[in-house]
Length: 285
Image: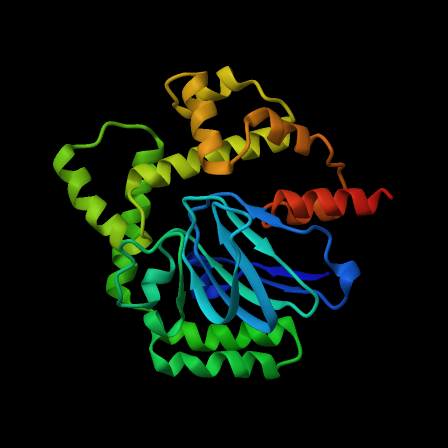
């Protein structure tokens, strides 16, 4: 499997988390049948440059083909991907609310679904897919997308996005927020991200717990529940399983199979547990 990742520079570094690309040229490039992506607060634009890949939300047996240029909304539910020989995907993962700074459309109720890229960027964006397919390298595809996106920046949306980041900081600090202010900010939050502040906090806490488990390889749930602001261990366990489909202990059991290597340390911020497990075992075969 050919995999590339790169952080953006310049203007896009504020709003884009990273660029990525995957290519499966033969059966040996497919390390697992299904890849699991846990709920996250970032949406993705993907360009299918080869054969369609397949996606399912919440039910890993209910797959639909994905092809062309689409925007994948952020996930409040576990999402599954099935790859096959001939897949070639170029993607751009945006920070929370980042894509909204380049489109005047509202992102209200845009979660757990896909949308053609033209819905948010108009018919003029349709040239991107064939143009990207005609290029030879990951770097060239990044340059083309940057040239497309940067001129679309909307300063007024950028100001809203900055206020959103300030609100997120307060939200994560668990400070008390004035009810009127919370109601006002919630409207902007939904407009820019597609989810409510409450849903964002739940996703954030689950992702913090995943990071904790990955670092400590321990399931001290009571300690973690208190640290992340859950009512008790039962509340944490219930929320964790709701968002990931796994118990904390089963996730830790998977993490314990991983072995350290340079690839893991460099790319673990980007990739799924299946990727981590595959590359740790591949390294030590």
